[in-house]
Length: 178
Image (cartoon, rainbow, N blue to C red; front, side):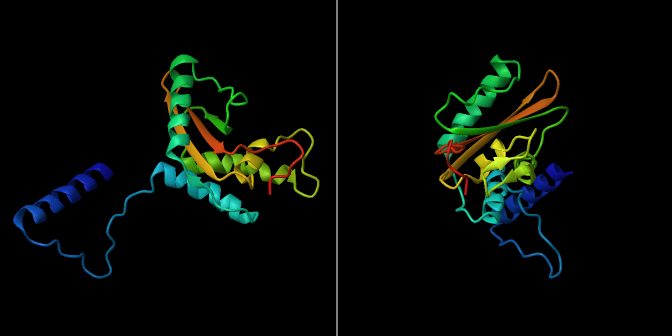
């Protein structure tokens, strides 16, 4: 349906431009279709929403980090059988999410990481027993300034792997995230 609407819109624009006529605006009270936010915008907005909630500066999108995560998720998909990556050895901070059966949106991936916030206590920089908070604290780490993310779908079992890299990395022992 969306592809048909997009094709019709492109055709209409081509006809208007080809005839030398200006496109006329839609009648008042109607809405025109808008482009869906790009994946990079969605990752960035979801991260920055979590960051503003705790009073830390917003992140900027990094094409360098996005390219690095793209290489990493494709490597995990193509060479590692869609297993989690060992992100501890890299020069960037990282989060990853494996979703079985379907791809997740960028916002859903980030919201999954941010959901750990309910187990984190800022006052003593700790996490509730039997829980982990590292992916949440990486999202909101105050010294991190840039982000890049990518996702790959693994055909064998229709899982998706999402990875985000953060520069500089967070989760430094002895420091609190924000």
